[in-house]
Amino acid sequence: MTTEPAQALAEGDALELLHHGTMELEGRLVDASNTTLRAEITLDGVTRRCVYKPVRGERPLWDFPDGTLAGREVSAFLVSQASGWGLVPPTILRDGPLGPGACQLWIDEPADAEALIGFVPAYDVPEGWFPVASARDEDGDAYALAHADDPRLARLAVLDAVINNADRKGGHVLYAPDGRIHGVDHGVSFHVENKLRTVLWGWTGRQLPAECVEVLTRLGAELDGDLGEKLEEHLTLSEVQHARLRVRRLLRAGRFPKPPQDWPAVPWPPV
Image (cartoon, rainbow, N blue to C red):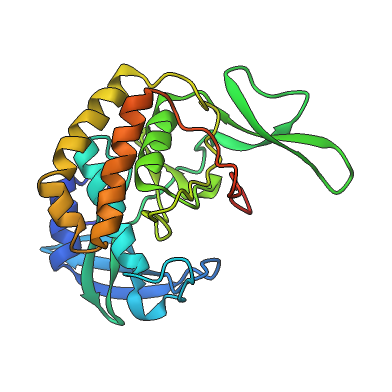
């Protein structure tokens, strides 16, 4: 049996592994609010780790009465896949040791990975970073929640606006050994009401880069076709329709969205 770094797998190979591999549970991630398990998955002598979130371990959410968190996780990957940005690790819905659930490729972060989001002293925000919110520690010292002005994060901010992500914490951004970033934990996305909560507000109101406009244009077309049909397997028709509307609004405005006025703009905890 060979074990290669997870990031070396091409997306198609990763999806094949997730769909058809044999899963062996390793343990539970205790910080997660819903049942989240780490497992090894093996196919044809190749082994990777994955995150397995069984539907039976989901806590009901009053404001997400339809569908499943697992279905939303898969839907976020499908939109990411259609964008071509590769921001969400390969994610599928499959049967596992505890029944049907979302199965996502595990991302190993290097020990020396440099985070692009976090709390920094308010007087010492790094050059090229955006302060997003103010805070004080238990000693009363002033800090800023901030993130880097990085095109990879800008793409993630656009993706979150499309899927209406209600929980983009700093800790939900992972840094792969190959330099890519990945967003995870999308179980509270795709609501029909505006529930965007994120730490990535640094580009608020700024013009969308040409690359993002191009991707949004393609997403709009695909939501009217194959992508929309795939999402309807996991979301309600209304949720898919509102995803189309959000893409159209972003294209019409040509700018990054502004924080909502009737909903907390930053998740808690933010990192």
